[in-house]
Length: 104
View 1 (cartoon, rainbow, N blue to C red):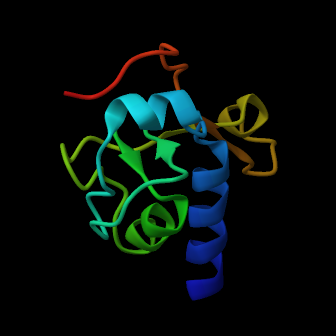
View 2 (tube, rainbow, N blue to C red):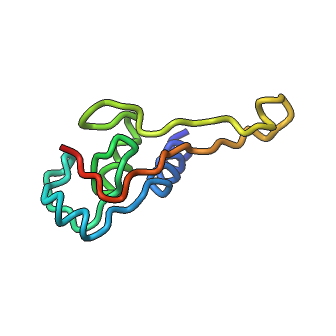
């Protein structure tokens, strides 16, 4: 349903790290989705920066990075579900990013 897709997109965005002011100053770039200045941004697992709202709208349509087309997140079934007796809960696996990495 549309509601579930939106809820999933919100959960994905909330699981992504927030860029610090220092990272955004060093990046000195615009959001590649809306082309507006970034005063806040989320950092994807492929180390690209986007406004959280822009990325959420993007995730309503597809689960790939707008720049490099890498999968934005990986989903792992809960261990109980893998054994066939769980609730179907899923976890988003977002690898930690180096603190000072800026995409080139």
